[in-house]
Length: 388
Image (cartoon, rainbow, N blue to C red; front, side, top):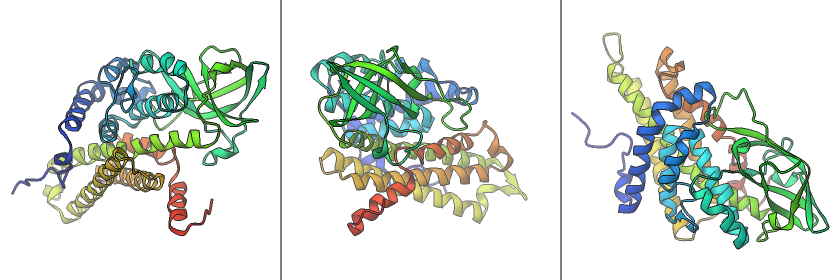
């Protein structure tokens, strides 16, 4: 008997969406089906960032979608989550690109920038005419952003910036970098434009993950910046950490799409692949593993939707984001690995999506806070004691 339930949405989360939210999801889903899926395998294999997708992403209003004004769409948090989910159904690298542009570059300019900085950067970024990157992580720091060594010092009316950043998405293609640095006045953010003397952003090659996105190092050698390049609205680690909360929120949704893509293809495979005289889908062991995947995807969907509703109500706590990022990325990585295994020898072929999603998710589970970091965030909330 055919099931009346959607195997990728067992609890009918779709019915909980508003008309606008459903329209956003459908629009991005069509874009992914029509524009992303036909080329993304080739992009991953050739380590190529699909720049040709940028105009379509911009036309849909996906850059800075949660920002009101400045040419941005002004969508709610659930809509942004659905955008991330559908983009990552295509590829984590594409979602990372949009996530960095929106949550880590446009957000801090909007939240902490001057009106001049907002007008200078937000409209062209919303149109996809300017790209940005976010410079926080350093080679020696990783999960400890408070240990950053990049430093900016006042010289007359200017700032002079020295240091380096590592593992920076979009760095080589960015027109502007939001760079966080120590100063005598606390942690400050600076807008460093491409081509500024002393600023270099070489691409990191030979990655086995996120191969369809650009990852770079950033180097600053006595980079002289005008006072107008500093973000005036924040002077502490709260600035970059609030940006990470925005990005982690989207990451809580994105991997659901990757997991759904893996399960969908596996369901099709197990219906047609025969072993020992019957389709794989007719065996108890396969059904048990498929059921476990559906259970975990359903849990992640409900967690993400509740997270989005809390965010839209202004009641979201950073620890709740940690719970969702930790749970949902782990869910997706485990499902991608298990799908790869259940495909047998075919699982290592790029003809099937699980191995690509699996490799990408190895990065997603690390960036924006490792599992251990999020466990400690939750542990601190439970005990009142910081064990970092």
